[in-house]
Amino acid sequence: MVIEMKRIGKVMLLLLLFVALAGIMNKGEARAAATYKIKINKACCTVNVYKYNGTKYKCIKAFVCSPGYATPTGTFYLGEKMRWHTLDGPTYGQYCTRITGSILFHSVWYYQPQKNTQSYVQYNKLGTLASHGCVRLTVADAKWIFDNVPSGTSVKIYNNSSKAGPLGKPSAIKVSGYQGWDPTDPDPANPYAKKNPKIYGVKKKMTVDYGDSVNLKAGVTAKNTTGFSATNRIKLSYYYRATTEDEYQKVKKFDTSVAGIYKVVYKVTDEIGHTKTKNSIVTVKPAKLVKKITLNKTEKTLYLGGKESLASFALKVKSIKPDAASIKDVKFTSAGTKIATVDENGVITAHKKGQVYIKVQALDGSGVYERCLITVEQLVTKVKVSAPADTLEMGTSMQLKVTLTPKTANNLTVTYKSSDETIATVSRSGSVTAIAPGTVNITVTANDKGKKKVKLKVTVYDPEASEAVSGSAVSGDIEGGETPPGNNAAGTGAPASLAAVFPAGYFSQDADSRIYRKGK
Image 1: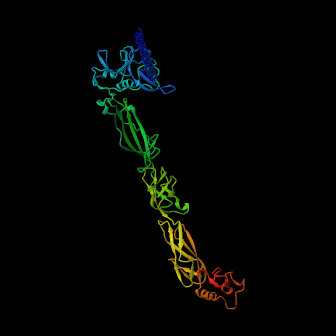
Image 2: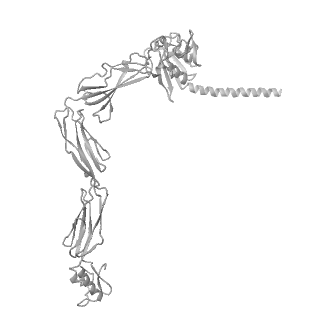
Image 3: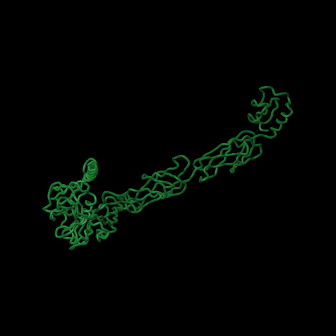
C-alpha cells in the first residue's frame, strides 16, 4: 500500500510539472500571437495586417484577396498551417493557414500540387468575391502570413465598402493564358523572377526652348512584368545641372523657365514590385544666349605668408554681352582647389603655391565662359643675418650671411642698405666696408611683397688711434700727467680729446688707470 501511494505521488508530480510547462509554453505562444492581428474587409477584398509596437497596433501591410459569399464574418483565431493542402475539386493550395473550420488563407488554387499548374482564370479574379469561402491570396502574401503570423493570432472579418483599410487596396497583377506560375512566387525557378516591366517611347536626348510648354509623358507607354499595360504607373523624377561640368542635383519639377540640363528619370513599378527605369536628357535652351563674359581681371597673383589681404581677391564680372541675354547668372569654379578656392560670389582664397585657373561659366546653356589665371606665391616670413664680428677696422670689409625662411619662398633675394655710408657701405652681395670710425645700422630687406627686414649694428674703429691709446696705456701714464677725474671721454678713462674720434664705451680703464680698447 505504501509503495502504491509513492507511485501515485510520482505520477501526480509529473502531471503537475507537465501542466506547468504547458502553461509556460502557452504564455509564450500567447505573447507571440498578440504581436499581430489581422482584419479582412470582405466587401473591399482586402487583408490588413497590424503589428503591436509597444503602445498600439499599427497597420504594416495590405494584401488584395478573394474571399467568397460564404466567408463568415466575426472574430476568429488562426489555427494549423499546411505547406500544401488539398482543396475542393480536388484542387491544391500553397501556404495554407486555418482561420476557422474549413475556412483558410491560401494561394490561388492549382490543378496539381505543382507550381506551374495554377489556374490563371482564378488568379485574375483576385480583388473580387470568387472563393467558396476561403480567403485566396497571391503566393507571396500567403507565404508571408504562413511564415510570420503565429497560430492563435486574432482574425476579424467584416464588411465596409467605403474604406478598404489604412493603406488602401493594392492592385493585383493580371496574367494571360490557362495555367502557369504565380508571378509572385519567390521560388528561383519561377520564370517571372527574371522578367521586368518595359518602357517605350522615351527619347534619349531632346532640346526645348526657354519657356516652352512640354509634356514629357507624351508618346511614352509601359507594360508590366506579365505584359499588361502599366502606362498609368509611370512616375517621373528630375535632376538638374547648369552645365556639363556640374553634378546633377535632384529638383522637384521640370521647369523650362530655368535653362540648363535636366535628367528626366522614367520609372515603372508594377503590381508585384518589379521595376524598370529609363533616362532622358532634356536641354532647356534660353531665348537669348550669352556670347561674351568680361572679368575685372584675367590674371592675378596672390601671396601666402603675409597679410590676409594679400591671400585673397574678389573676381567680378564686369559685363555680359549681349545686354539682352535671357539669363546672366554665372558660376565660379576652381580647377585646383588645393591651390586656390573660390566661393559662389567670386572671392578667391589662396592655399598653396602654384597656378590655377578660376572659371566663370554662363548658366544659360550657351557654354560661354571666361577664365582668370591665379598665381599663388610664397612670401619670406623671416630674415636672419649674421656677421663675423660686430666691429670692423677702418678700411677693411666683411661678408654678411643671410638666411631666409621658408626656403620655398618664390623670391629669395634681398636688398642691403647702410644707415650712414660715410661710416660704412654695403654692396649688393652683402659685403660691408668700413669707411670711418662710428656706428652704423645695416638693414637687410626681403625683395617681395612681404618686405620682411632685419637690422645689424656694426662699429667701425681707426686702428692708428687705437694703437696710440694702447701704447700710452701700456706705459701706465699719458703725456701731461694723469687724466684728471671726470675729464675722460664718456667716463671710459680715455682722454677727452679722443671722444671725438671713438664712440662712447670704445675705451676702458683698469684699476691702475691704464687705458685700453675693449676687446683687445
